[in-house]
Length: 443
Image (cartoon, helix red, strand yellow):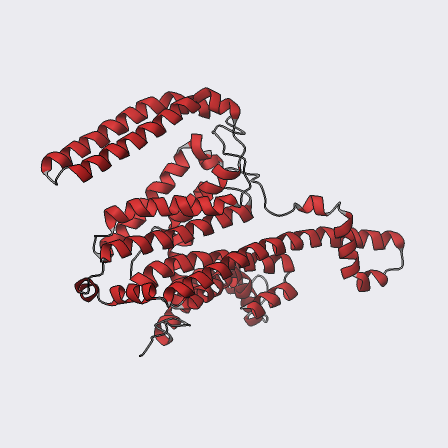
């Protein structure tokens, strides 16, 4: 895979190669989260999209500066609603712990939830309208805490893990197919909330200009040490230019291109560090007594339960861990992009493509999950350029106005779906357990 990425750098550009590499690393983190749930415990989670979106939301809440005018306009109403939610949760928890299960208790909790939602909506509505009316073209939301965006990677894990705890408490008792449907629908609810609650995320108006953990290109281009570094690195090419003005123009262009490459390399270092740390932790967990217990539960829940293992508790734990890792990846993605676009979260990209990565790489194998992230995302991005090259190669004898050739060239954007389908079929036919299947310990 590294060889293929290097070839992209040689034949296309190093900016494209590093962009693919960084997105492969982020995809690898997401596939590791899904692999923990499916490969370790056999849990089907089709709600990966929702947890990735919560990671992106964490990046906004952590890094964006607070909008003081919006807080003054409706911040008090939002805080009151938050306290009401906390009180309702505490009352429900008290009722569940101190009263035996009965129809009266269930009806009482349902009535409390419905009444609480109505009160919260009535309390929040005036404040939300005031917040969203504060310069809606630029802000129109509360903003965040103005902290370094890398803190959002931890907060994103907490957000996703918190939602996974709630979802797990409700849905993990369902049969596998019902669990898949439930998690998918819950993720759609999360996306709908993020898209329509403008006071929290600006909704479909998007949040742009998020803070970076790495330097800005424009700052690097005016920094002496970076200019000297680029000049030294490209001294061979510059020495071939005798004219001073042309040499300076070439150097300026190299500095502009080099600044973009340098920024992407900085992101690569950060993302690679996360992947390595997660790989070490997940490998240790996989081959620990806990990991062997999880695989035993996956293979035979009844037998594990008969041996005294708390299957429900362990399923909930691993569901939270996998979702938290996906939340980290969601925050990493928004960190690199520098913007948060709720409308871009779709199941095809953020759920099913991640599942393809796990299947192709090999479920139950952390290295397989990482390889699957690289293979699938590389093919997803490079499918169009490769298809265009092959079309031009095989139709070289045809004229540019040929109907078949023109139709094939126009259909290039759709070849990625064709190639993904063919690749998945080949993997399922010849490597049904993935490229790097799970290693079975025999003792």
